[in-house]
Image 1 (tube, rainbow, N blue to C red):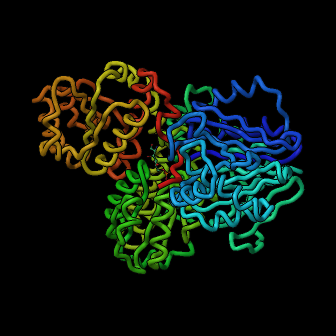
Image 2 (image 1 turned 45 degrees about the horizontal axis):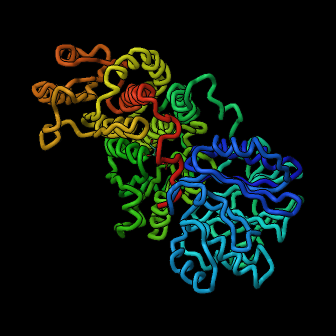
Length: 613
Ligand code: M6R
């Protein structure tokens, strides 16, 4: 969750740290802090609130150093305040750490340390780790060894950096379950939770794996395991351009990302569709083609928006490939001892590739002998590396906490996968050709929807003060109803629920009165008439209908009579509809949040990358 960045080199570390913290702020933003070593003395500055609060303090100071680290926090242990903010110090005040993750055995450790006379200022698990490392340092007089020994006794997860005025020319880093990347520059190194904080300085990186440490000085770095064995690792190259990290004139990253979807769908499909045979080419799956051909069952897993993609994927794969699909919340799957066999394919869906529950679900599936695949956006992320094979989204960095372009890319990749499997099984060449040609038209159709942003904004203004919303859809649009409601909840703090439209009469109908806006996904499909009956049920209770409809559908007459507002999307086939029907809902959520004046890109209590369970 939290963002971390460390620097050692010839620049003023404070500038690098503050710039890097801005880049990783989307990972957590309830407090922030830095530690540097200036003239062999440890200096720590931290502040609750957004990064701007820390800026205010730092801009009035005159510090300079070539080594240090920073942290932007998403609270797990202890409320967000100055004391609980990172970095945390040991009892000597000479060792400082920043940490992303959770120390599960911190209560036992704290008890042990209290009995030995150590004291604590904060409520955090991280301070327990700092004091623990300090207590071991008293005996070993070696920062790397003290860190290594402490971490060997830790239950839990960490992406960790340690510095100390005892050894002022060194940063010690380690990871288990939380990301940490080493950037290798010209006479400088950057350690960060996220490649976006590194790309300003270098594209050369090394990804330490779980239970590995990296010890960095100005001229060198060493990698070793927590078992104290030195290792070598191949360098990778960051696949990211700086300009992708800018807002490009949009007021928020979320809006920019919504508007990028024509382009991101093109990127997701480029070179992957063969138009004269209706086949799909997914290079990342070549090695597992045989396993896929023999697959008896596919399990799709993820969290939040990625779980909604999985629901869409279930319909797509079952319909095109005829393979049974199950969808599991990663957080449930990993703990419920699922019955799996070697013929099962488990596919993790994740924008960040770092979501702790999804990563663990994949590890559980591997332990049980399944073939594991990743549908991931961030190249080189933990899930991308933990799976046997996979397909990247190529959607570029998604900075807004509310996932938008990653969602449409995920369902596009799932559609490609469904067609890939379908063409191995029962989908004819003609049908394959028809589908790829329709997918090709998506960017143009998406841009038509985006042009309606001003009229969607008008609708948003009208309903921005409604305390509740209901979203209804059937078939492919049921997961879209869930996703539309999630978008509204997370950025505007308005209560919203998504339902399969026909389920409404089994309970939620009781909520409907003249104050309830009901967003209905009423696109052209073979259950359109059934959906119209559901609309009648809402109207009979005086609910206000905002309908998403297909241009040119002859059935739209009913909607024109019943709906207060209709937003049209271009016609496409049923299976492709969800890639279009979500876009008006993203815009509606965005403009309602804008009207309500919330922090759209960094909504309260949330973080972009959920690396704790
Ligand atoms: O990075 P991931 O796709 O694994 O993240 C999963 C969820 O945390 C994420 O989709 C979350 O629900 C978003 N904030 C939704 O907009």
